[in-house]
Amino acid sequence: MMFGRMLALGAPLAALGLLMAPWSETRAAPEVPLYTEGSAAQSPWERSIYGARWGDRDSSAFNTLDNTNASPELPPIGELRPVPAGIAGDPEKGKELAANRRKGGSCLACHVMGPAGNADLPGNVGPDLSEIGTFGHDDSYLYNYVYDPRVFNPETSMPPWGAHGILTEEEVVHIVAFMKTLTSPVEFSDPRDDPETRPVPVEDRDGQDPLVNPAIWTMETALDLYEEAGPTGKSCASCHSPAEEDFSTWAASMPVWEPRLDKVLGVEEFVYRHARATTGAEWLMQSEENLAMAMYLRFVANGTPIDVDTESEGAKAAIARAETLYHTKLGQLNFSCADCHEDSKGANKWVRGQWLGESRGQLPHFPVYRTSRSEIWDIRKRLQWCNVAIWADELAPDAKVYGDLELWLSSKNEGLPLNAPNIRH
Amino acid sequence: MTLTRRDTLLLGACATAFVFSGRGMAFASAELAEEAYLEFTGGAEPELGRVTLDAPEIAENGNTVPISVSVDSPMTADDHVESVLIVADGNPNPDVATFHFTALSGTAAATTRMRLAKTQNVIAVARMSDGSVFMDKKEIKVTIGGCGG
Image (cartoon, each protein chain N blue to C red):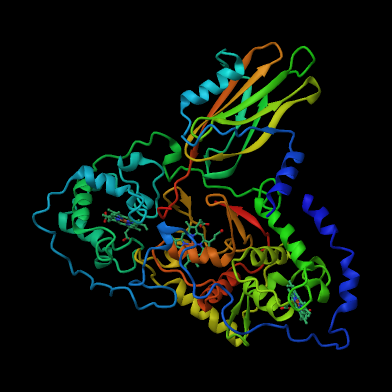
């Protein structure tokens, strides 16, 4: 609504831009100018963006997206460890641990588990364990399932709590003691707590209403930046008509395989490399300027169905790499993207109180204003967070693998109209 | 993002007076919330009814939880809603907003967005032109993230 008025201010520039277009003499579109040196993001990448609690965790002993051989090896099926003798299990301690969110989200992230955590919004990625005490499992089975469930099921999405050092042997013994006390179905104090009946969230907020989404105001910055001369004396408007004319569909074709960089180039990295090559401005990825301009370039293409090139040799190879990565276990918590976002695994279920989406539908609305953090996140920051949250070191936002994943995600979102910016929890 | 411009526009766009007075950072208790609405009603305990509070059953933490309130009233010169107070008993400050109406308002309905830090009760109290007071109350459950965030 109000944004329409702001855009109108840009209109008189249209004619000027056309007159000054440097390629007006030639017919074929020239190669897009790109600065191809160095990093497009803060370099070296400092792992502090999420604050001390998350950013300072060193997970380098476990797989990351660019080092998938770091984690300890998968244990052989059936190789059970002895239950440690001499530790007396305390069900009360086990009950607390099961709901302790600082321990990797812990059991309630995926299981209803009787009275643990007052049965406050448990998840349902795994089975309801409220009566596991009556299932006839012996101590060895329960201990080993928690210590490392892969000895029973190598495909499981449940973390290897003991083998990856998230819980100590003693803590696992306490949890086993607690599980043995679980013999009756849980009584939820509120129907919203039951993940089987909890209403699925409906996302119907108008992300482009400035009263709903504070991110809209960032585009005012972009409108100014579009006309602001950089170190070369040129601005975007020196060479282009207003973005809503020149780039009314462009963002829907991004990201794209870029041979000059030997990687997939997304809108945010493009903004840095194109601006650097033309206006001379250095808008590093995730800087305020970069976020604003990238958001604006997506916004002006809103409504255009996502249509990325998946046919070039480079694009095909990138998508194949991403397909493998999507199923690779990462981090100390040992999750693949698929564990949370594929329908046969965690998607369309609750991880604690959060509904897990599947890959189709997860892209067209970026960047998003995150209400839980009061920050605007572009797609690369979201991908970084989906590493950090599973205790896997994130990479710099311009990392080649994030480009691969972004192209793969875009191919899964083919045909869905851009709808940026938006708002998410 | 220019905060000043944003604030101006926000205020221009809604006919709402936002009151976020700084009562310190301690979380409000049910008592503080009650104190706040009793001050508004002049000490009278509001009756349940006539006020309808519409809010999501499960909400995100953050500053954009939408809530709507409407009051059943003929909105005539002799019988209308004067004001509606919204308080939340789990936020650092219980006061969320006060809406003012006159007979010319036509209907007594308003929408706003509020910040929710944790699961809590949101209470809407309406004061009528004859001095009578009514309320509605909803518990909004604030969700818990999966990965220990």
